[in-house]
Image 1 (cartoon, rainbow, N blue to C red):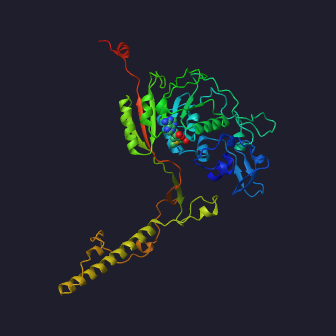
Image 2 (image 1 turned 135 degrees about the horizontal axis):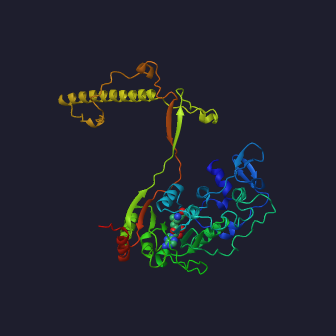
Image 3 (image 1 turned 90 degrees about the vertical axis):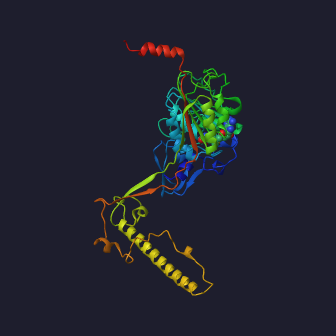
Length: 452
Ligand code: SAM
């Protein structure tokens, strides 16, 4: 499936759900599609009721000429299809960040700002340890997410009599226990916080993520919400700051005020688009006792590898579409031949230029004042020592049969994928180790001192 279709399947195909920089009112998001609506794609038209099938099902278009697959929603698909309210963190970055922060089922992660909720969704899956209610069955409003949000074992069935909650904001917040994985998300833009809460509820992630509308640079990370049995303390072991000025928020992250775990090392990542911001962040992290600062930029590139036969066709491409099957590549010898020709022509041009120059100098010496020294015309980068007698012919002249078979199975062709979405920023990582006390020292000595 193309990204277009994924996007159409995961998000309502209405103009209001397209990317926009202004937040969409929550009321709009709750709007239901008329029952007669269809999803219209270049693969055909798909009436909404036909999409209410288990995940993995193939659905034929109304005309029967095209088809789509209904996919179970994932953070990756959501990142590609979510309504943008801000710049978002893409999967190449979020997967790396969560790995470096050692976020795992049961972890507590602080996130600020939440923005469009891309990273929020990725971290919600990472911390989920099954102690919550099923994340997918909760509160999927009828008609909002179609089959993509409802299919499969966890997502209920397409039976119209299923008691799928129709609302979204009525369920009371879950009482949290210490053992649950948690995402503690902060966002100072009230509408963004509110829309994200609504989306999380739609996706059944509201028991994993707590969104707090807060300016963390001014007010820090404590949770005033009395419903949380973690007593207003976040006790996080991981922190992700995607803020314009993370250095203002960092001093609020301490073990003493309950925002960070008191028993474990804490890892932080700050996502900043410019180096000056990253350096300022590092300086403040050092002041605040964080260590092992590390600056990383994720330059993600996917390589498409194909094995090409000597006829320039991909080996084993029979099942591919006709278009792909017909991909032609130049052979090594053809490429070398072409380069040699280019070099030969360049040399010839330089020789002509030198000749012209010599003639002009001669005229100059003979008293012609109009002639100027135009050495600059000559490409002096050329390697004068290299001798090329004549413009090379075809590869056949070079090696007899004109074909250089590198592998019995053809040659490997690697092409980079041009459009992999990512947002280039600098990632500053650091660790806040547990303090080493005098008691720790005594205990360690008692435990590890070898007998004389
Ligand atoms: N990481 C998000 C995602 O993947 O969708 C995108 C975050 S966006 C680039 C930055 C967000 O930080 C904005 O929504 C902004 O409102 C929020 N923000 C900026 N300063 C803040 C602050 N002091 N406290 C809380 N949120 C803040």
